[in-house]
Length: 154
Image (cartoon, rainbow, N blue to C red; front, top):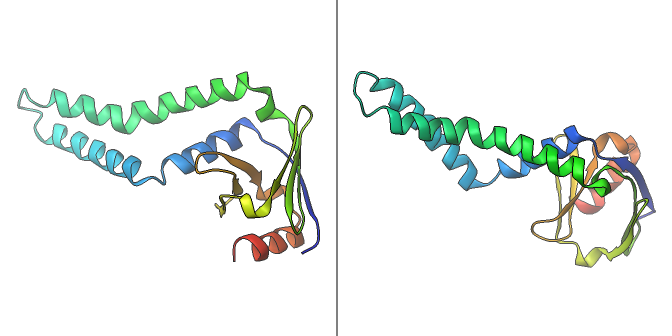
């Protein structure tokens, strides 16, 4: 493998999209959202009964309040952490991943990577089960992306 160099800068939209992507891939989140939808449906079917209030509130909480509150929390986190907004250079070679920002630099052996995953618009390089580097696919050239996928995602 030759050296792959990708320069990126994560936007608020990128950060929110990846956070929702990782949050809504968990079976607990999916099942609680389905449960919230069922509660909303249940509350609508028993409107004439005085017992519709609890399923309505729980359904609204699970389906609407959680994603909306998550949005504002993510926005606050992004705006308060300057490292998230920095331009970052990722370099991958045969042995290491080097990450260089304006205020930090790190090198990690490729054998110590937790995993690498792909979404529609992003490459996520997981350094642990909870921490990932976000690399938008738009920052790869076509050739770089194909090489990266052949090495890390095959």
